Amino acid sequence: MVNKKRSITELGNPGNPHGEAGAEMLAGMNERHYEVTGWALGFFDFANTDNVLDIGCGGGETIRRMAEKVSCGRVVGVDHSELSVKISRENNKEYIGNGRVEVMRASVEKLPFWNDSFDKIITVESFYFWPDPRENLKEVYRVLANKGKFLIVADINGDAELDESDIEAIEKFSLFNPRLSELEALMNDAGFRNVVIHTVSGKKMGMCRRQQIINGYYFTLFNGGEIAGTFPKIRFSASKNSNSEDVSKLYIGTEDDIFNVITTDIL
Image 1 (cartoon, rainbow, N blue to C red):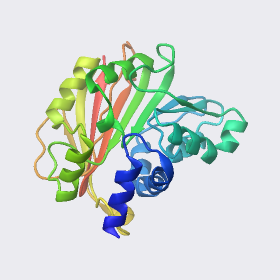
Image 2 (cartoon, rainbow, N blue to C red):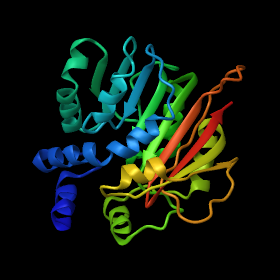
Image 3 (cartoon, helix red, strand yellow):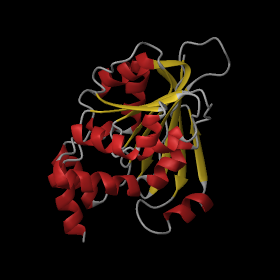
């Protein structure tokens, strides 16, 4: 079973899904990422008029879940994979039909939107495929509105205790996997400030993950303090150029054996 999953991932190419293997891989990602994405979306305080962007929308499940919460706004999904765009559209036909959702082929390198276009932005399990994270984060910052929120969800990070399969995937797919201090520096360079790390216990895979997340502990660290031990989910928050006390936030989530979260403010 493990060998089959690896071959599907390799044939389908998680960095740019294509072909039958890519379609099967995207369906599996919708299922495997469901719990961690739900946990991460809990950090968004949705308004029904929000404009929301999903970067690297994959199979479109995150788009669907957010569209349920944004009844008078819109959710836009972008992906550079033609197959991902096709499947995301198929999985959100109803919302596309009523104008609540739009899915287009585009890259984080050059997002086809005006400055300050989105109240909330999320990327699920795609950050480590970004071609130039330093510049790409600046592009995200550009399209994020004042008081907006940005959420990054990822399975791995450079401070986590990675298993053999994680290490193999990093090498095979040339994944960008920075330490948390490196990621904080990139965020600061893009304009984000005040990084905070939140963690919650849980397991990367398995039937009991939901129960462990719900009943697990919640660990918070402010202003880039060091993390002791292995924690599996990370969230970053950031706020943007606002005199209001209601600053915007950028969240990053990881899911490694435990879950880490980091937040920052955009000043």
